[in-house]
Length: 282
Image: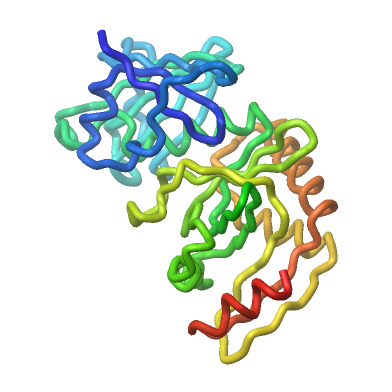
């Protein structure tokens, strides 16, 4: 069977090519690769789930993470209190291998096995390799990267559009990017979980600064103490983790980043004056 390699955050998974092509969109195109020289493999197989993984118990949330025989079990439903599973994944504790299944009768083939499930699996894989998914925009230039975390409505897409007008900068993402410690450096990577194809970049850069966006009527940078940087980064993280030990890993990584990169609040006018102001003071 022909396989496809997906490379996100310098980590790879290998899965049947049909699992990617059936997703019905091109979100993974920039992240397909061949070179596994420095990557870690995670083989994902598709098929019908074994009976012992099926659960008909309604869940108050769309997804649940539990453990079965020292493996991680992921369950995703179409909606809250839906008694039927939609997507199921079983993954080794160290995230080295996994299997996924999806109920085609509930939503048809077009969604594919990865749709909606992939971000949960990658969040756990990344955390096991010192990485996190951050709700943030990010800019890259000459191997360096700058992170702009924030919730919905904080101006991430507006800032990305302003920066995209300058060919000197590459938009690594407008909504979700990967933060990962590799050796002594912290890297920012693009991800497939950005709304617009133009901002789904497979590029990476060494983190050089953290800026929290705040759109307004003027341009201003205000430095934050490490504790405030930590709190804001924590609020921006994608955290589908139920294990206290995993949350300890999250907190430890964010404390490292906050101690090395004092955050700044970037109040900016949503016009062409914002990028030159930030570029001169970054």
